[in-house]
Length: 84
Image (cartoon, rainbow, N blue to C red):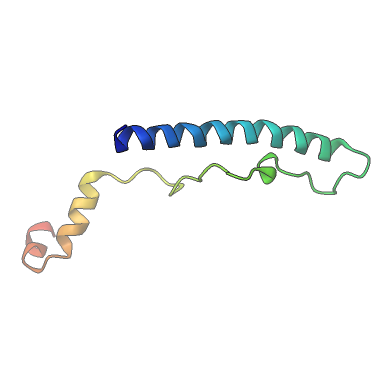
């Protein structure tokens, strides 16, 4: 088995675990929120997950490659005049 196949298999296993945990955590949150001694604030369904989904890195629009390139060029002393 190649390293790429191993990492793909590991990623698939993590995805399956997250899916099962999400289904069980939704059930647990529904029982918790609708029981006799329910909390004042509703419990989020992802609170009971052991392996939560990762949040996106930035909530803004994706950065364009050209903007990144221009920002990198501004750091180079001899290229500042050409960029500005």
